[in-house]
Length: 210
Image 1 (cartoon, helix red, strand yellow):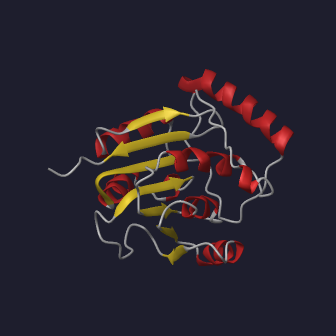
Image 2 (cartoon, helix red, strand yellow; image 1 turned 60 degrees about the horizontal axis):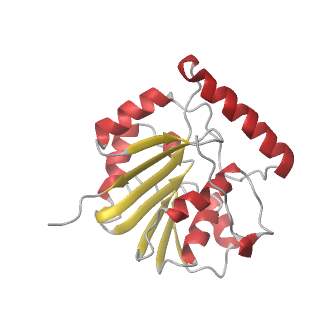
């Protein structure tokens, strides 16, 4: 289990919760030479706004129009393309992004294998897919769940937890083993690893063009 600090001194006044905490991890996985990045399920817009500080073209997509409008209002001066739509059917060309990222959205998308295939198809050759998601507790993973419940309770007690405005879907549909199975069925080269605060990281790199 790994704890990745969210060190962002220019935004010390912003709200904090565990999703926002892991925006820093996703940001770090986007290459410094990326030019086009897609944030799927952008919610309140914190990750998209963070990426836009160093990425030339950031597209922030969310199926919930009121949430998207609140994100745009929160970051009126940030050069992000805010886009309302369902990633499964929205008109986005394949292989058009250097990176596709998503925080706490995969469990909203239904069929994990279909969702991962769709997201990976949007990544350019050599690009990155990086997702932070949730899984359903299971007896098989009891030590992990005990550790994550304790750590989550402690950090929320110390830092508080800002309530996001996006809809909540709970519990997640898959256990960790089910998520691993579906991820590797869709993307055999993907990596799946546990994070500390009840989160799972999925990363995948598209094969470079010949």
